[in-house]
Image (tube, rainbow, N blue to C red; front, top):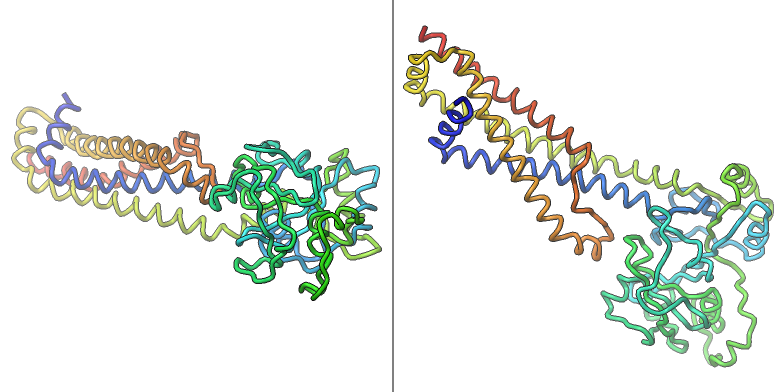
Length: 413
């Protein structure tokens, strides 16, 4: 009877109740969406690289090294001599080493020179390896493997030719058009910067710069592809390299030795620690979004309270009737609280349904255009606590109109 009475009371005031329900639904939707996307984005961000014990580059800030080596943002302060790389990679504590050479691009996408070990040892997420959607890794000097975003946005397929640009500008007039590359592989989506990268061999990077000096092509000097393939294309320097160690216990020891390397100034960073530092820099934006969500919810709860408070003045006849049949002031107090809880529970259900539909709809779009793999399953312990807080907040917000109803009932005694 108690629940039935509350439902009939809400239906009797369906106009104002529907508007309040809509406001609560939107506010709960925004709050849950922000929390879920924040958590998923943080998880995706932290999983950009895994299984790499150390990232080594020229001495600079740890965040700068992380940004240009993993996210391909910015530029290094200096290169690393190939001899230094070979010296460190040959250490008995090192299991594998992946060299990285940056500096060229293609239509705004970064080109990265590396070795076949990159496809073998580089991991992302929970130790996921790189997999090919089509083709295979590069085998020849002028082979190129492209990320899924590059293939999709530029409409590339296997065996197509492409020309690399000197430098990292989105528009460049310094083209390596005398030595085009052939697409031999397209990687599956990873949700990491790999999707927006073109991968070539270190020999390929050296080959396209043989007849270049100081960033410009030497006039009148032309070397054919056949001549290039006969040359020793051992690189003189690289941008950075990743290390996998035989024992995680040796990480700090190897890091210290690299940071104190005598032949040239180097910096070794732990990618996990650097990623955490980088995420901390985004805390302001994260907290701002959460604050906006809380303010939206607070406004909706105040609206709910105002609606219930206004309705009490119109319910004097109802109060008198309920009092006449024996309803106590406590009964009327609980009736208002129940009405508020019913509105909130229905709003929460609609908000979660809206969020699920939206996530399913835009899941592929977020993955392909922003590299964010947001799961449609948003139910988690955090969501449970959020819903519990919303319910408690509803009880508090409905306390003022409930007390008003209680006082009105007491006056009729």
